[in-house]
Image 1 (tube, rainbow, N blue to C red):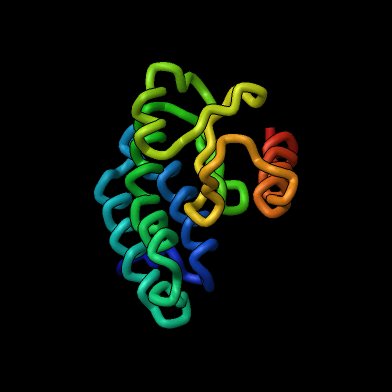
Image 2: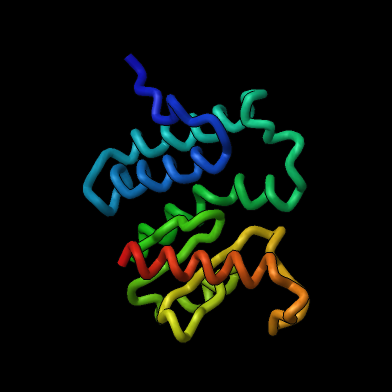
Amino acid sequence: MEKHFFEGCFDLHDLKHRYLAMAKEYHPVTGRDSITLFLCRLQYFSKSQEPLMKFSIQSDGFQLDFLEYPDKIDKLIGWGLKVELLGTWTWVNGNTQPFGERLTEMGFVYENSMKACYSRPMSFWITNLEPELDEPIQESHLLKAIELLFKFN
């Protein structure tokens, strides 16, 4: 009987959270079955295409972020880094220095005050490096993510 990893997930956000939990449990680095993680990945993509998930109406940037998510998570866990999904932002802790260049290529930004890297969805990308006061959504989201990170650590 096949295990349904994403049973009870009703939106794309739930799928990402569940995938992260499954990757932490079944990643080959943990000594678990890599076949199970592969099946989990297949179900992740399959479940995202169900009409209830409304994947097809999302922006191209969101879809790309969502489809690349399992690859990013598997790499990060494989490198022995601690990965947390806070809202729509992915935070990475641990010894990130040896992977700095690769993390940057993956879209991660190092936050010196947090001693951690984060990746945010394309919808939160901004062209300027410093947020302006008229960008309350990005600023508010970052503050909430940082607040959550402190609560979990």
